[in-house]
Amino acid sequence: MRQACLLVGLALFLAGCAVPFAPRAAPTDTATSRPSKVPKRTRPPARRPSATPGPLQAPTASLTPTKAILTFPSSTPTPSLAFTLLTPLPSSTSTPSLVPPSPAPSATAQSELSCQLIWQSPSNQIVFTPEEKFAVGWDIKNDGTAEWDPANVEFVYLGGAKLHNKGSFPLPVTVAPGDEIVLSVPMKAPRNSTRYTTYWGLRQGDVFFCRLMLSIYVLD
Image 1: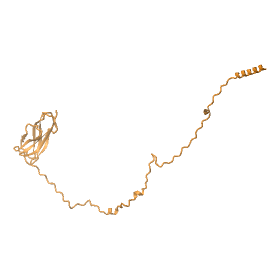
Image 2: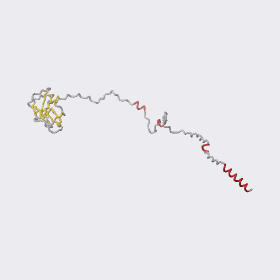
Image 3: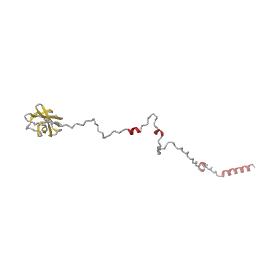
Image 4: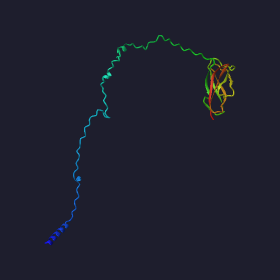
């Protein structure tokens, strides 16, 4: 009897071992299997109208003038229009009686000893090389009332740079009023490079008139 029970228990043990081991199914993700909840759309809060106009809105100007513009202070008197209209305007055609008439211009007396330069050669601001020789000529007109007599009128050096060898020349002929004469002087440019100006004129006794000039540049 004891042996029969052992055999039955051994058979049951072997039968249990013969049943294949079934692997446990992996747990399913409930997060993926369940449909996700879509959040409900919430309506944005309503915007309150702004008292300040936006950047694209220009404030509308009031066409109705305020009382402050039309109201004058009580201390400022109101201008009288009647006084302005009753004031007589000055007449533009009235001639002042106290202004004396302007005198007629008087003719200027013509000088006794006078000249007019007609032309000059060479002209002023001419350039010479150091120690270059040249001659200058002035064509002048006697526009005075007295004639130029060679006996008492001569052409002389007055001042400035000394570009000459001889400082005085007698007139070659008598020059009557209205006539012209060419006065010429031989000269020589200085050695140094700079600007030089020499002055000449006519002399009658102690009277000098008809002043002439020449200005040159000396450049290496």
